Image (cartoon, rainbow, N blue to C red; front, side, top):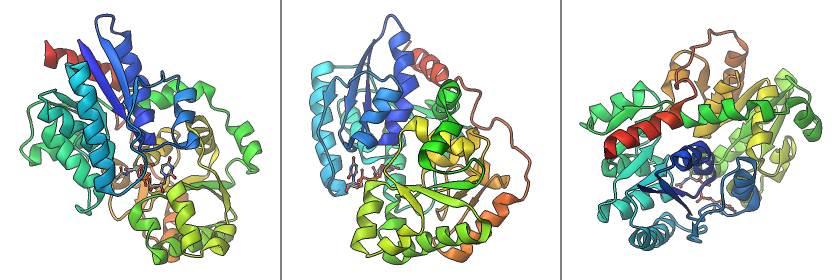
Amino acid sequence: MKIVSLVGARPQIVKEALVGAAVRQHSAWRHVLVHSGQHYDANMSDVFFQELDIPRPDYHLGVGSGSHAAMTAAALVGMEKVLLKEKPDALLVYGDTNTTLAGALAAAKLHVPVIHVEAGIRMQPKTMPEEINRVLTDRLAALMCCCSALGRDNLAAEGLTAGVTVTGDVMYDLFLRMRPRLTPEATCAAFGVSPDRFVVATLHRDYNVDDPASLRGMLNGLARVQEEHGFTVLLPLHPRTRRRIAEHGLEDAAAMLRTCEPVGYLELMSLTCAAAFVITDSGGLQKEAFYAGKRCAVMMPDTGWRELTACGWNTLCAPEPQSLLHAAASLLAPVAHPGDVYGNGHAAENIIRAIRSKTA
Ligand code: UD1
């Protein structure tokens, strides 16, 4: 059997690390890795390949940045060529980016079964690009691998029950695998922050950072969290966010915080393990904070990871100072740990088992 994996944006590279390795461990299977090139800066892509021991991609589609249509179309055309040449038995896609949708569409039209890892996530607003991508990818998928029962239930509510399986979260597998390599104290020293006295923050969602009022509200809110609670806020800047800060003339607001370039997996997880808590609009980091035993303010109107907000471990907040201060205060109040809600660290193996039974 031949399996093609498609990655493109940084969270997909992280998810590919253990799933790709599990495919390659299967002696009778061949694995081909494709990078769409949606993320291309060294600190948005290469660093994850190096740290997570992911082999060089067999194909690089060179998609780069652009409008949603331009990116999706370029990846669609590129993937069609790869799939026609490789004639795989299945295509693995991850998450909800434009790369994910393009791969699923190219494969489905060529009757190549699509395996969607992190299937069944649903959230508001329905117009969010990632929501459009994930809904359509699930529609096209032959096998939908869900991180938890919630994903399965969301799919069932849309009438999707065949080919649905709950595998657990491969990001939890990866966190457990990488934990011995994390260096919280040394990484804190390198970034000039003190363990438990700082907050890790990341912001990149279009609806948060493209709107000047939201971006200002978030930066001012983070500065208020610093002032009121005495934490340093460490903010690695996604290139989109860095650009918007310059475009909207918000350099002074950003200068109140400890900003830095985007960080790799090992640095981000090391920092997360040492942080007082996390503030993010990243789907991945809100779960990774939980894996590191840290609470998280989720700067989104809704989240797909409702298991963590329903029990109060994570809390939603809006892009304005009062909401952020309120969220920070709630994260400092104790709450019971909800247990292993995203599996037991064997999601990659479960995905391989599901592929095997689907294609048997
Ligand atoms: C994309 C995904 C999002 C995911 C995120 C992870 C979509 C619709 N969104 O959002 O689901 O959470 O990746 O980071 O697919 N840029 C660079 N260098 C890079 C990559 C991007 O400078 O290596 C800049 C470009 O100006 C680009 C902008 O960042 O236009 C946004 O990148 P893009 O891939 O369109 O979306 P993300 O916000 O990264």
